[in-house]
Amino acid sequence: MSAAQIRYSNVAVILHWLIAALVLWNVGVVFLTGEEVPPALMESHKAAGITVLALSLVRVGWRLTHRWPPLSDHLAGWEKALARTTHVLFYLLLFVVPLAGWIMVSAGRGDPVSWFGLFDIPALPVARSRETAGLFYEVHEYAAFFMIGLLILHIGGALKHSFIDRAPGLSRMWFGNAPPRG
Ligand code: HEM
Ligand code: HEM
Image (cartoon, rainbow, N blue to C red; front, side, top):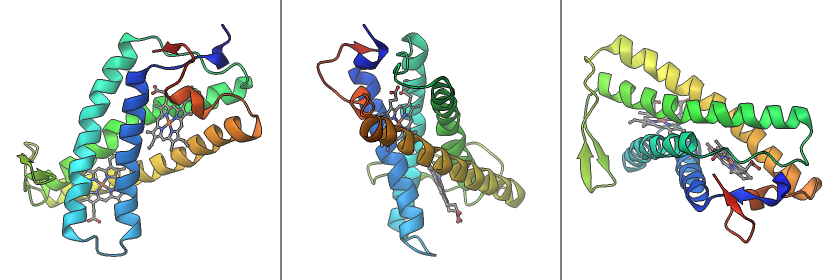
């Protein structure tokens, strides 16, 4: 079976798109609302971000216990290296970005985060400190910007393989008849 004809497992597909939707929501909320993000949307940013953190724990657990499906053999060697590097960096940033945000607000006002009005998530046990909050603001911002850069590369790659190379790209990260792997 050629590596192009397989797809990711249903669990991997669901986690991929759920996390992608939450990340895109978070980026949209801060960039589409202008200078002052309305408080309710900011609260949804925090709740969605902590959800990304929790889902990423599940996702890494899944990834480490299932073999990573080989990349499509339509990809050139350098494309494979670039794609895998992007994937690994994503896995790292899916922790760094929300964790830095959570530390920032915990060291700042230290208020709990309301999970979409359903329950409260307590602040992390870090000392209140302007310096810590300021430092993690920067980590949050730079790491998020780096992630957006990777996202552009990632989406570009997915679209190129699907629509220019006409090779299986998006279909590998979707449900279907192809045999599912990892
Ligand atoms: C912030 C949002 C996103 C993140 C963090 C992300 C992350 C990842 C990661 C880590 C993988 C590797 C597979 C795995 O272990 O699950 C992957 C695969 C993939 N992603 Fe994304 N992704 C995002 C958004 C998108 C979007 C918007 C698209 C479509 C335009 C997309 C299309 C794909 C495809 C097609 C694959 C399969 C690659 C292959 O052929 O092996 N992703 N993504
Ligand atoms: C995947 C998750 C997340 C992404 C992609 C993300 C992304 C971003 C981005 C791009 C900004 C704008 C940075 C700037 O001002 O230039 C931002 C701001 C912010 N984020 Fe996040 N974030 C995430 C998770 C979180 C979490 C979990 C929290 C807190 C619990 C949080 C709290 C904040 C706050 C308070 C700001 C506004 C900072 C300010 O301007 O005062 N974020 N985030």
